[in-house]
Image (tube, rainbow, N blue to C red):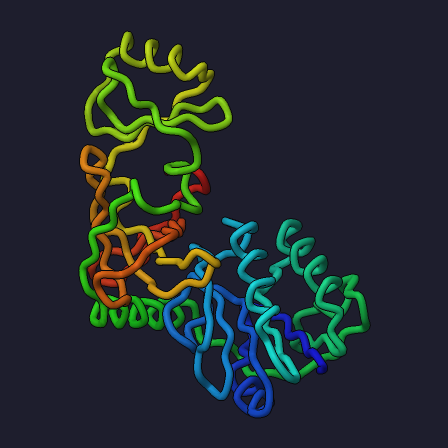
Length: 298
């Protein structure tokens, strides 16, 4: 089994090269901004032109959630068969992305590493010498944004409403669900503590004495407060116990009093959700990306 690693660059497109050179092997598409195989904010394994597995990364840029991107990459690489072609996102000469991609390339130990001519990526310290390939220019940024919007609208069209009881699922990618819940007669709002941070979800203005009592009860030293509507519009996915994603969605609303989150997702309802992955990218009902939230901000 051989491996060819392709390094993306914002100015150039691998689309035609991939179509011509991956007819007899798997494509591990690790660029979350790519829309050739469906909605963005995820990575996927493509076999015979069909997506057979995917994982949510939650953002267009891997460095917004590097752990999610790396876990997803290893998950898909483990599933790939035959001669693999692996498409990396652009490193954009970002120090974080550069280190991530070079480290991942070292672990993959590909037989070939190919970079676009004009990118100057061949001068990076890859584990083997990089080859240079002449590629056509990528679409303008405005066109790429329109393509992503079209994919989001496609997702909405094939989605149905799901109401997920958060008391019955695990949550990944958000501060919510990462700690233990505060359940006390003196505190009626959603509160949980992790790493010394008390995370409260409420649309009320909390009194100072309420906050003080809650922080004393949880032995917290920092406070994080978000409104329930902060979750609306965030991309998410439904996962099985073993980590496989099976439904891509957009959060519509969250009722912390009832522990219920309403999600438009492309899974068959009622979906057996074991794990809810929450991303950072926010999408409105018209398919427009309205800006990401910070990691662990919600």
